[in-house]
Length: 468
Image 1 (cartoon, rainbow, N blue to C red):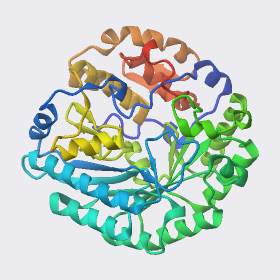
Image 2: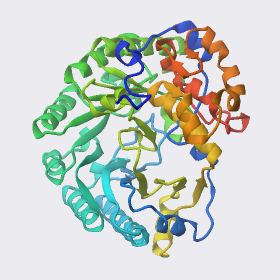
Image 3: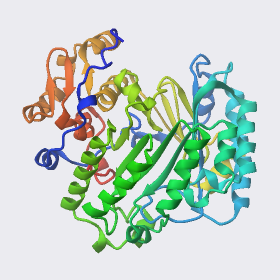
């Protein structure tokens, strides 16, 4: 670890994160979540033959991360801003599997060699909308097409309300080792307002069963800023969730954008907490999770100190991509299904967000990507800075000189000048060694990283949520 400038450098990983309301109000603004750089907003229509060429030139020595998007849900959650299809018919999912299999076969046929799969994630929608037999069929199919590592990160998103008595056992028997599911809030009034009613008893049962079956990690999603929420209700929810002891927690800021997301039109705006109330809730979240011993990873994410995500951050090996924070950033990402995104080398590609368009392209024997971008060497430099700020709270100038052949304090002189006010306010330090985000600046890591985003301008106004 001595050769890694990002390993165990920041004591903030052990001190937690410092909440300063004045500084948050001063610097908090809209910004990307940086699951990529350039972000998906910069994608352009893809040329014919481009996706095939990218797949053909994938380096077979680079391991793979597979993402499969299952867009179906049985219930409409009113806070949701995702591309989901609400249906009661399981036959829809069965037909969708056939399209997925066709896409997977087509893409796999273009790869040279047999890159090993180290990571698999089923997202949605609700992947457990698939029956137990369909989940097994999908798992078996993937294992006939790809070579999987014996020990990898194999995760799935679940809806506790839709789990069958056998589903968790089936998933564990297949080889899934990590679960993620949304709770959002345990207050019944809040649950009714967002149309996601699930009892604490149900959540407790799922957590206990997952632990008994040996899932190595469970992530729970919470949201603050929902209708009828208060500091008191958020405190009660967090205290109950902390007792369940999930390995990871994602606590998201609800962005009310009904003009963009139709489901949110069902939420009564008069019941939403004010900006001041939301900030107080976020302070409560930070305080309670710090007291419970969770390590703040960044961008709404927390993990127990012994979780692989927290260990990777302390060891300087944390990454961030379209699947969020990850320990396997060296992988190429292959996405399958509606709206899925792939990242192969310096190329990023996205499938259509319309199910009809996706199915039509598969029926025609076409590769389904409709948008893409190829990052430039300049993009790579900016990405390196942004991602290290978000993952490790630090940018090492010596590494920038070695990797990119630049003098950082000259090349990024304009950006460093922009950061001077933040430095004066104690959010970060800048010296000849690099940029170091301090405890008071960790919450505002996205705002600090945005300074190095060469694409960010007024054309994207209103497309992002505020950090807090």
